[in-house]
Length: 536
Image (tube, rainbow, N blue to C red; front, side, top):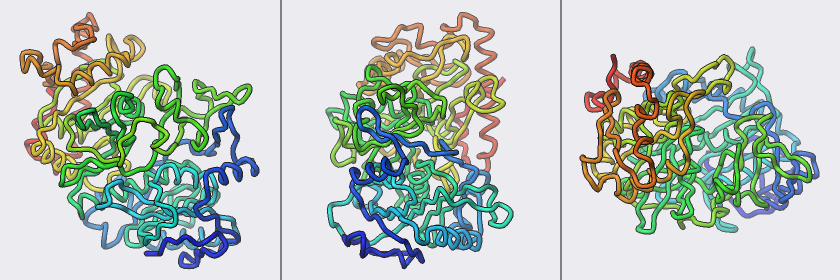
């Protein structure tokens, strides 16, 4: 569906092309107006710093098992169908859409026109139609804001209806909540959940399908920054591995927080116009850039406000996934526009709760592809029901819930780009050292920053291969020496002081890697398989 964006006032803009007859349409409202609507209608509370805080309701995170893609001529032979990419019929989509239209009838709605992709070569124009004003704030913060009164054709539409609940017995979905992507109609419908992240991740999934097939561009779930010499570093990592923290560095310009593309002209470009950061245990001392970005215009989610309106960032009584969204220009040191040069360094971040992976190691092309497809981190005890001790967790390409194509499609693109660019690839363990979770300790942030800085400056490579030791289980090149990091920290085996227990746990993890990779064997070539760890 293609509709024209316009600069009409709220009284004349129409949603009739969508079949929606709204009582009032709030079109491209300012953040000040949206803040006011939220507070006046008890949809949010202002903190002592006049930042709006809202509660997303039952869902405080994404629900990946309730995300569907319409099975049609565009997707049938291309999508990697399975537990992550679940097929649904056009009839189910049409039925739910028609019910949402009825649900929206006579309601006051919030409409915004914006776009994704900082590179104009890949710009994707988006219209969001939201039931809640704070969902509209999120859209303003996270997508790229066009020039005032700029006219353009809308290519994709996202409809967010948290108060609409599906009937699983009648509507062809498993639960009351759902997120459905329709590539033929270029529309995403979201119902039954108020979690704002579903809005941006829906568009990310769209780009992950379109860019590799139509533009030969690699989409990536990563953050990116740029140094004084315009050298670009990108950081892949799942939730809790430090992706946002490590990329937001006062000495380097932030390109983007979470989602990027790598095009044929060797540009890294941000998909978004904002940042969506976790704020659990946030402090001004450890993460000053993010802390200072929480100012009027930002949107806090599911946090607890204490006395005198002060946010308790250590409180996780609602969820561990407390969040804030804000426009990227709330970070002082940013790249303008959000585009960087060909990357010099790629960092795969993992929080290894078993304490066996080196704190930093250099990967060859095969290992890079293998670890990219694996997307390893670990779940800790207490994070999910039934998880009593750390368990390995794998998410292909460090973002499986958003990847409609087979992971090897993205991995093979990455290998080619690595070869063409000569980029250095590093595996960084931000997790445990000196033993597993419960015995060892979390790697110190200042050590991790020192290792990343040494990799980017070339310090780790100055002694060439003489500075590296090959890990006997994972075959990784781990440095012997790094500025500002004790030598003993660089060797996980030494930090354990018990070789028998260390290798037992290391081989346990290597078997988990190989077991997880079995589902990719049909599509993975020998070059990728050469990156696997040893098993015993």
